[in-house]
Image (cartoon, rainbow, N blue to C red; front, side):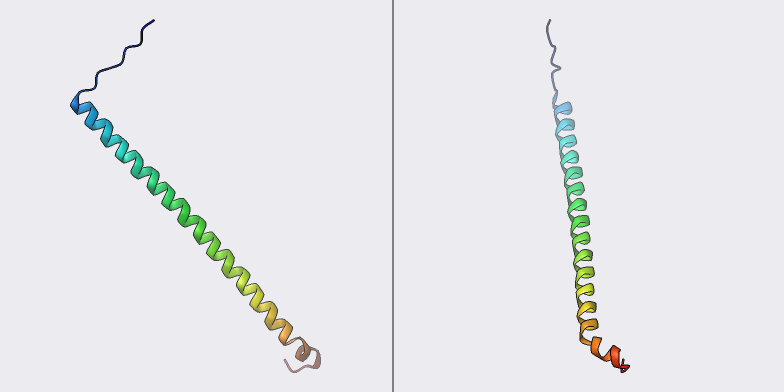
Length: 71
């Protein structure tokens, strides 16, 4: 049993190299999209947590005034 390996000419070698460049570019663009999506999700989560903490502090500050009818 013999395995035949096709001979690559300059044209096929150039096409192979060009295909690898496109593949790397595609991989890089997918990685950038993934990292940007994760960072946006983290920013939104941080904003929501910050907003909830701020609202909680505001409610705690004005809690005494709600009881007496001033707020």
